[in-house]
Length: 308
Ligand SMILES: *[C@@H]1O[C@H](CO)[C@@H](O)[C@H](O)[C@H]1NC(C)=O
Ligand SMILES: *[C@@H]1O[C@H](CO)[C@@H](O)[C@H](O)[C@H]1NC(C)=O
Ligand SMILES: *[C@@H]1O[C@H](CO)[C@@H](O)[C@H](O)[C@H]1NC(C)=O
Ligand SMILES: [Zn+2]
Image (cartoon, rainbow, N blue to C red; front, side, top):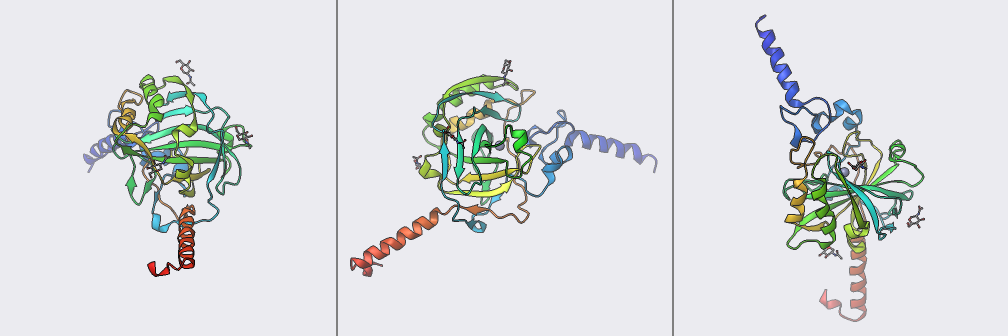
């Protein structure tokens, strides 16, 4: 009996080293020689990561509910060119945005100003988005983080359940390169290593996102930050139509490095339980329906109803 105890202790210590201790990290960073806490253990260091309104989620389109109030968002200052610091923060690359752009409308209860944007990706263009649609994981996802305009800092905004609004954009692989991303992707080479930064000049948010007509279809739900502290203060807007990038452009993100110079890949949190939350979708299908009805009316008025 006594002889078993040291073996159990040994097993227990190997287990704790391999599952990690200390700082949070993505699953792709968890190894026996670099102890860190992968997504399944985030709640051990940051309690909120185990709560009930966590992000990301898998969006089951058949279960989403139409909300007529989800009209197109109103973007202000998004066209304005600015300089922002692009930084490898050890988890992602992030660009800080000065106070010049805000978003409202689309049933948001206030105006929210853009603070920063960053990305989540896979490995060389493989699956890498955080949100998934009917189980499909896109190669990459961008988050433009906004805080309610009456707050002074993100820390302050995160204390309010509706303090933060994040716009999520998917990417899909296209045959040709997306020229609008050339500047950003070139600059990635300058922030390959952890804690390095460079200044991006002459960028605008509207250049990085879809055209306004391609942003009318979106999903809305209440969730959290997708990294610790996993704070549940986020109104999520996830756009349906992805932004095109070539395979080379998507792969460029995989050249970045985590702390310790391991490839920065698969920087996404796995999807979290819905826990009785409803996901709403915007009403663009209704526009199509009324357009069809209009056609039917016009056609029958013209005596062409036999066509139907
Ligand atoms: C939103 O941004 C626009 C353009 O920068 C600015 O004119 C407007 O005052 C801002 N609105 C609010 C409510 O901050
Ligand atoms: C960017 O890097 C420089 C030089 O290493 C450093 O002094 C500065 O604090 C960094 N800025 C940010 C925002 O990290
Ligand atoms: C809108 O999205 C479609 C694909 O869904 C794409 O073919 C088209 O080029 C996009 N339009 C613009 C202006 O980005
Ligand atoms: Zn994010």
